[in-house]
Length: 249
Image (cartoon, rainbow, N blue to C red; front, side):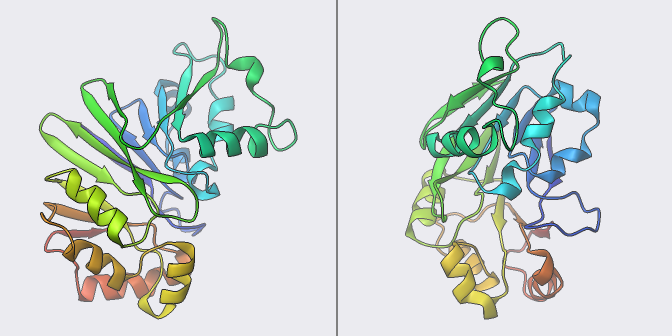
């Protein structure tokens, strides 16, 4: 399993670090479609066949409309977009509605279909190219799932946007041993009320989440730093790493 983090910012940073959340698995599967998707060339975009969305927030779907428009002329259609019913409803009603972006029902059916929307639900697993991709529910301000990906004896888990608590602990403990755990950390501890209101992590909450696990992951990737707080967060996380094998993306 080849994992490429194309984008991991919690906002619009303007520093060419890759943009907002988009993770590539092998060459043709994406988790989320934030602005980091722009790291791919047009030819590489044409190879993408599957997009798994975690939730409906803009930093995780921003590049999806223009990415899909780039698929005209691709030899490998359709693209399948997997998401919870809430996310698909928001995409269809608020983005692909004919005003913000062209309405796409005319290109989701038939032999020349451009894309296919497919519902995915917490607890559901999908087998693709030797990978088992399983959705699990996490706590956020809108319905959100993380993804567990198993392939060739390796276990990668992306929790998406979430906050420490009983739900996250129970879900991660059910997954068993994790080789790479990708957890967010959006705000510094002094902005804890903001983090709690928006259902995001601070360094303290992230540490609490790790401490609650029955098994520690082999390595921890920290993601989704908000650009306005990134410098302070990096200093805090580097001074007091929450895990012995910590990478701050």
